[in-house]
Length: 477
Image (cartoon, rainbow, N blue to C red):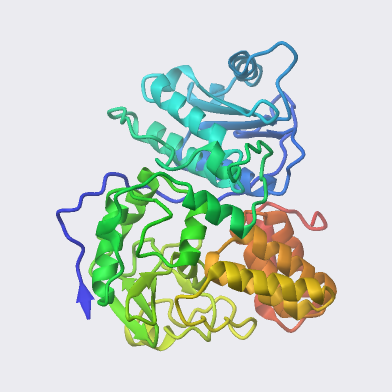
């Protein structure tokens, strides 16, 4: 069973995908000066290694020197503009790349962001574009996922520098519905990474102004639901209230907001990989696009009324696509779509990431009250706080229903502390750390697994692979 994307729906942006990595680069002048610069003077270092990799990949792909400097606060009496200009001169940004350099400076206390463009790129990256991105940063840097914004910013700026110009589009780097008030849960909280509860997120979504979303209702025909979903991507609609999304996927969109350009870029990849094949497995379905184009399959979930909803969260939790690869990989060998992928002869159908190591929870009949289910699991964990299984069940709920990484990590870190020899919790933590760009914690978890499971060749291979990717020397990690 196949269907094609409506050719009348146009996509506007195609881009390579960078995923992140980073470690601190100290201020040191001289011949050993790095081709990318990273300084983090804030108290938040969990994403340093991931951001370093983003900078490294950006320099490699675009030939532009990138510098990212995160300050706890501005120097006394200095503006963000003056600080950025001084840092650009101090580091001679772009000097070793024929004047092609980009400096990104963030002051945490003031929540100010500045992009400094070197002379050779001034005609390619205009002030108006930088201004819009700087204003967007003031919102995104207060979210749970500032590293996602920084990685996306590196993609945007370096692609533009590599392509040497083009008309300056006037699109906003922020989704229409997103502002700092939404991210704070309406309480005006300015702290970076403010951890909201599920109730906070759902209340913030409920307060959003009315929007015209009637064209995106779920359908009794899964193919029609997919077509409507693709149309929303093509038009850049990232609203978390999209009616055809599962309730958990609406939370996922609120926690991981994406702007119109990002949504259209996702659509562009689907368009290139059309037509797609629909696989069904009971109350779940999977839209699988042609291999050879980077994308994730679209997971659908049938309601008790027979309507099909898109489950964006499960597309991210059931499947994985490596940043240096193209086709997606199934994460678990108990997924109901494995037989269908094999029948399609999909090239990665049998290349299962966590084969025999961890399982997936059975999806509950849909719909149900997400808030009530979460509260019930939270209450069970609170009543029996030393029971690792309770925390793991809560973590699986947040992971598979909403792909809310920070909440899932909170639970699985607790479960792993209570039951340190339960290897399935460690594999889950490795997966979560990697997807949350916490590369150092992911490596520590892999090291633990490779030592505890000497007969698991895959654990040792992964540990060796990621140590080499992040340039760790023997004895260094």
